[in-house]
Length: 467
Picture 1 (cartoon, rainbow, N blue to C red):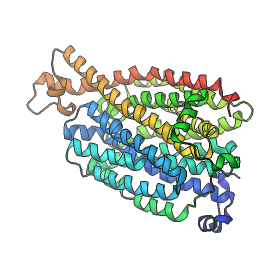
Picture 2 (cartoon, rainbow, N blue to C red):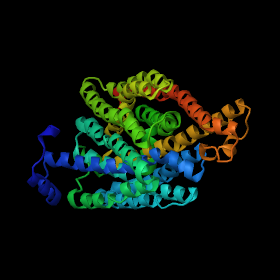
Picture 3 (tube, helix red, strand yellow):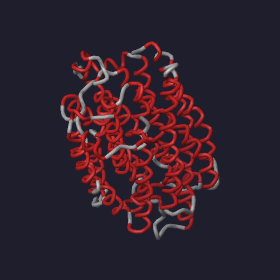
Picture 4 (cartoon, one colour):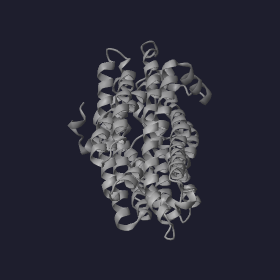
């Protein structure tokens, strides 16, 4: 059944309240609700990206500290807590777990707006990470029990729309609020509505039978965490998918985390304009790419399963020269013209990768599989990537500052700004040096995306023989 066919009110009610009366229309309703949850997840997660520059200026932070806030603080506890929540999801009620997690991360997102120091903000972001840890494993496990194997790539593609849509909304809402009422109000506005979404999830979604599309013996078995981890690593396909996903997040986040700050530092744009620009060239294009990649992978993969890995490998490689051209531009229009097609290509890896991992996993191992992948993507990729990106900028800023005959960029330009009593030379150097350092960091990290593409290509060589 096509998504566009919609669903009738009585089908929703039946699916929500009567376990025996579940039909294909309710399946798409469940997917729609999970997409809304994922949107909320990434609104709360990504809104800080547009807020980094005003936070840096108010709290006088270095870019490595921004990297901690945007990456490590969130990802370190999100990844580790996700393992425990995933194991709970293998045995417990996934709908209940999901709704409780939504309430937790929503309240803690609002708390970020009340932080008065860097350390308070860091702790609040850690709390958001713990709350969001249970979202993806529980949702992925639900999707695998609502959609058969040959429809999971498109299901994951549609579910994956939550990332670009949520990121876009977080950026735009954040940009508008910064321009009009400051960065603190942005956290409150996107955080508190999550409580209502949690109530919707708890009342409208039903826990499906485990492994309904899998052999009974597999559906009844709950492998240990160690068995799931060994299974992922021992299969060449899943091993290289996880490595590819981890590297793609690490390298990608080292740059994209500082794209909005770069635009603000380099060009004369408002926060709202930057949010719209980043949203259009990154999140809108990623939304299109995610769905198209899922459709292409499912369509071509029916005849040759290697397409599930060829699609992400080819997309990532083609995006590299476009990103390099974008960051080399001297005006924001030229940057946008190259960045948009790059965004259409680089986001092709997520849906085919998770669909393949879940097709290889046992029914009661899918939430754990997602948590293990999230641990690698979060603990290594999302936590270290922004930190490395920030450190790169800080080191380059010191270098370019010294090249002007000046010393101590961090102390001379706190928060990237020259103090009111700074000398004329320092006042003239702070902004341009920071902008140049950010640009060169983006250019340095972009070609390294070839590394994850190689692992997706290696996975394609094994996927046809593994089940």
